Image (cartoon, rainbow, N blue to C red; front, side, top):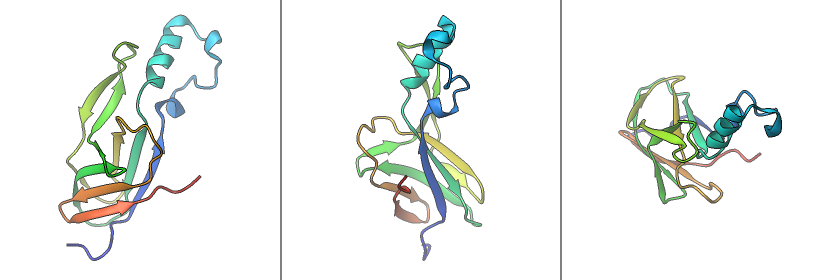
Length: 130
């Protein structure tokens, strides 16, 4: 067991934050791009975890607000009827500067706590307040 909580940097963002045309008004986009943007906007937010630990650690589980388990990363399919493809990303080995991105599927309310379970223990993290 580790004595101290691993040094992870956590942040949450939305797919549209990384969408190249996010500043272009929807009516100015060609129809196909408008449909893509709509499909992307339906995707769940993403939790990004960056390890600042110089020891390897196996992340097994991420639990949000003590209820929702996050283990998949959603990629857009650009089909509004089925907006994403789920890719299982946990468990994942993490070392210094490794990045884990996991989609927060089913998280509707404000995120108050994130628990990271690993082979070395279980720790609770809170997100920096904006």
